[in-house]
Image 1: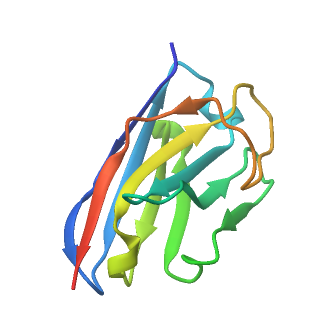
Image 2: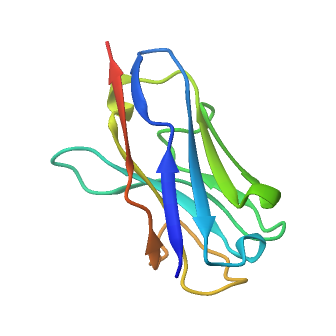
Length: 125
């Protein structure tokens, strides 16, 4: 059974930093592309970042470029989202997600199959 478990959210002041983690189990992590999305209250889910399996690239949403960094630790089956220079508008529940199959490169518009439960990030002014 595939599980994605996010952690690392919390309350931080504007300009601060947080690092989110998403621990994956039940899948061959090194062969999966992974993504982060977020959803603020009353808003649609928004793409944040993705990292494709192998060496097939990293993509960021326009609103986080230059501030957020995605990475993965194959040995720990974990994908990270380092968030710097946080803004009030970054406040949202952050989710990690994965496609249904291995060795599938994804894009921001991809329909992903596995989702975590989310972790709340709140940025205060």
